[in-house]
Length: 230
Image 1 (cartoon, rainbow, N blue to C red):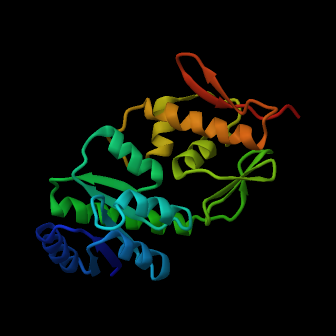
Image 2: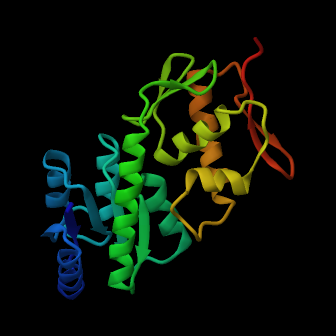
């Protein structure tokens, strides 16, 4: 049994999800506004949060942004905003999954179980401060990254892209492969979403180490990580 926080302003949807989650054996707390949800996640975090976007006081995307600045708490977004730009915004901020309304409540419960299983497996495989290349290191438990010993302020997507690229310096990764690495839980994200994240990642790498082009474009194929010459 896991403790789930359901942050949903709509009473009908909340009632259905509460019932199904209880039947699945979970302990569920419901909140109806973003400020209360943020306080609960930061000070008494549940195993996972189901988070609506349209909320009183603080919207769901602001909640994700503030939570991600402090923790890697599992969050599944529930929203009526079905446009790709909105989905990408939620995923880029660090949501673990994104479900558009109207949805099947049973599908939401299934996604809860998937995210919980994935997090449990990740925790079993955590190795603190693993070096991906001579220049890049990661702390898997904290979600931190360093370039040549200097800390990087990366989003979850940027961190996943850097991890994939830097583990095999010189290898050219297609956008499709990088999409799998950075959006493992998203099935309907366009490959071009990778370009925006690569652009931001390049900017952050250059801010820390401006004298070397760390990520190189291979026209018509994808991107590669360029380690400094030994």
